[in-house]
Amino acid sequence: MMERERRWLGLMVLLCLSASCAARELKIKHKDDGPVYNHTLATILVEYASAVYLSDMTELFTWTCERCGDKTEGFEVIELVVDVQHCLQAFVGVAQDLNAIVIAFRGTHGTSIQNWVEDLYWKQLDLNYPGMPDAMVHHGFYSAYHNTTIRPGILNAVKRAQELYGDINIMVTGHSMGAAMASFCALDLRVNCLAQSVQVITFGQPRIGNAVFASYYSQLVPNSFRVTNGHDMVPHLPPYYHYFPQKTYHHVPREVWLYNVNLESLVYTVEKVCDGTGEDPSCSR
Image (tube, rainbow, N blue to C red):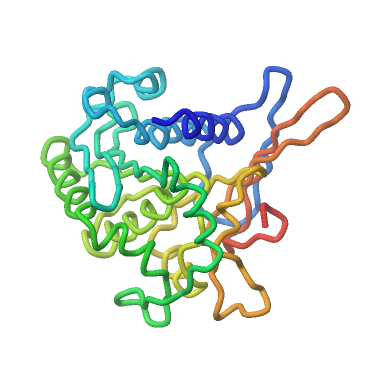
């Protein structure tokens, strides 16, 4: 992993899920009905979202890497899924402590990060999501999962894991571009594979579709959370234009916004579970 990338991802983990040693943590929950955000689970899944960035395939497959311990100790990798042509990477495995299949997607990395972020400003809603009238997404986000070797590799590995461990829960995670792929994967598992229990926690996810798509997604994958922090610009892209609600990108729910509040000599990390709209104006937007 490149040093710049390691520092960036380490900062993401630190800002998202930890307070400094002098800090305290506050949790603010919305009163809306819906799935309950599990902070402890998020601190575990962010380790998987981080580990998938590793380039050493041997350490990753044997789960002996630097991040492959503590909260993820004992994880059994079923399959590493790599698409060299499109520079994509994911893994599927079983976490017996969670009694779940875990799927993690790598985000954009290396020297392509800046170009990818800049390109997010101009991505247009240009693809009708199959089987969902009026649901629009961007073909690049959609294709990265659906039109590469990633999808068949993931689905085959999930099938193998289920043959070994039964019909256990499926948890999907990823960071940045990997978060976008994680959302499409979760939807695919629910719609096309008829998986009954799919849970999603992503980190720094961009917008991937319009409001109609977000509505379909929230109905089909209700147990889904997007963790954002006050120092990350990717969740604000592609831009949301509230003047054109039918034509603009719209986040899938539900956001969990993490930000710091300074009170004299103390720093409080506030963890706010936002409303179910996906575009809560009192959160990161």
